Amino acid sequence: MGGRWAALVGRARHPVGLAPARVASAVIFRRPPRRMQPGCTWPAFGAPYGPLTGFIALLLRADLTAVALFLGIAFAARLEAARAGVESAVRPDPGPGA
Image (cartoon, rainbow, N blue to C red; front, side):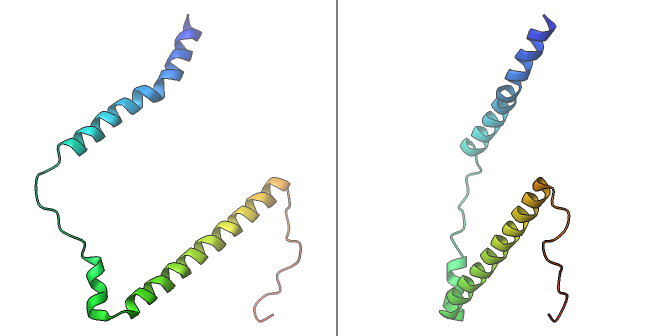
């Protein structure tokens, strides 16, 4: 009987835990405070600073995307090397100025 009970509790743990979270989120979204929400203020940023703001924002987004991409590639390469059991680099690091 103990094995069946443990299996039942193991299977029901996630649905039983998610039910109160669903109820809480439904209450939060159904009963919010009734007040006027402010409008979008960030689109007005380009008005005083000109169209150059949009260009700079695109450059910043491209830069952050590239950094995230390169970090993800480096992490994936290191993870694959660790899984393959590679302990040292294929080529030694040439150092600064090389």
